[in-house]
Image 1 (cartoon, protein in one colour):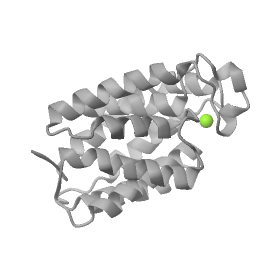
Image 2 (cartoon, rainbow, N blue to C red):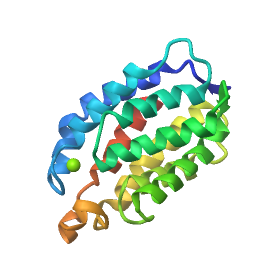
Image 3 (cartoon, rainbow, N blue to C red):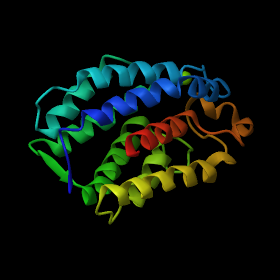
Image 4 (spheres, protein in one colour):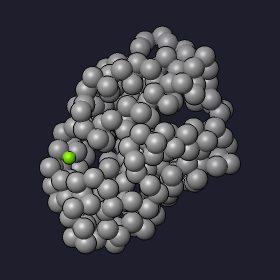
Length: 200
Ligand SMILES: [Mg+2]
C-alpha cells in the first residue's frame, strides 16, 4: 500500500473542493481579512489540477509542477504557503515513484516546519500551520489509506473546535484581536475542506 504519482484524482478533488468552499471561505476571511481566501484558493487549485503532468511517475516532478503553478498563481500569504508546501514535498519526494502511508506524517511535519520558517507563524497563532501540525501528528503510525483518512479527518474537526475560541495572532487577522474569538481561521478552514475532499 502506497501513494504513487498516479493520483491526479486528488488534485481534481482539491479543485472541486476549493470551488465548493469558495463562498464559505470568502465569508470566513471577510470577518478578519479582505474576503478573498475562497476565490484565491479556487484559482490556485484550478491551476494546480491543470498542471499535473500526464504519465509522470516521479512524485518530486509532480509536486514541482504544482509548485510552479502555485508560484505564478498567487501573491497572497496563504498562497505563498501552499507554494512552500509544494516545494518542500517536491524536494522530499524527488526520485520516488511511491511513498508509504507511514511517511505522510513526517512529510507534513517537514511542510509545517518550512511554513513556519518562511511565514513566521508559531504554533498556537491560529493559522494553517496549527492545522498541519495536528494532521502531521495524527498521521504518525498510520499504515493504510483508511487509517490515514480517518485519522486526518478526525484531526481537522478537533483542531477547528480547539482553536475556534482562541484569538488569531498573526497577519491581518491579528488586528481584529478578540473579535476573532469564536471564528474559524480561514486558512485552517480551507485546509480542512481540502483535506476532507482529498481523503474521501
Ligand atoms: Mg485574504
